[in-house]
Length: 106
Length: 120
Image (cartoon, rainbow over the protein chains, first blue to last red):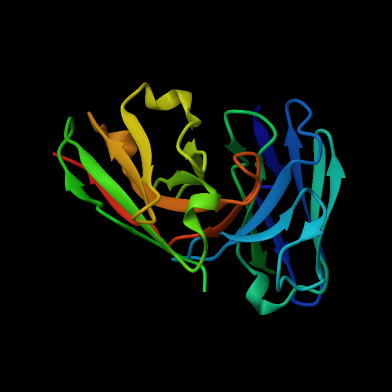
């Protein structure tokens, strides 16, 4: 399974919303996670099972989708949210990550 | 606090070997599957290998061509990755991560990573 994220980069002003997309080449059901990675830090889990927020993740992060099409929406972007975001399927072997979407300040 | 700490990385010549370690604390290590994920400089995440809680089930990325071996010692709360016949393209930050779905789950948390540089 190949995971493709789009866009590669999205430019957003603080306070606006951003929608990130992740597409799988075959169905992964709802076995999809989203991670946030800032420079010099390991990835941090945001969303698992496509729609469930991880512990201590703010409500402005939301995930949707199933099968092959998934989205991560960040509402009311804050300065702390500018980072790279990765999707990850764990339905099939080999596990696979998307190539990442960079959310940058407009 | 759940914590994962990697070690064992370094500078190695092509064809060389290393043994990476990941020490776990703050949770019952023997109850969780574990994973290695790597990230080449400036690039994205690449899953490397996974091991079940007892070590009885193991999976590897095809691209490794049998050069890597994942193992664990539940008595020592430690995860390992033996990397052999290293190539330039193995240069990366290697992370260990806990699996929250019994070898079918998402990864949380991740360690800070250990750097492997392959260069002559």
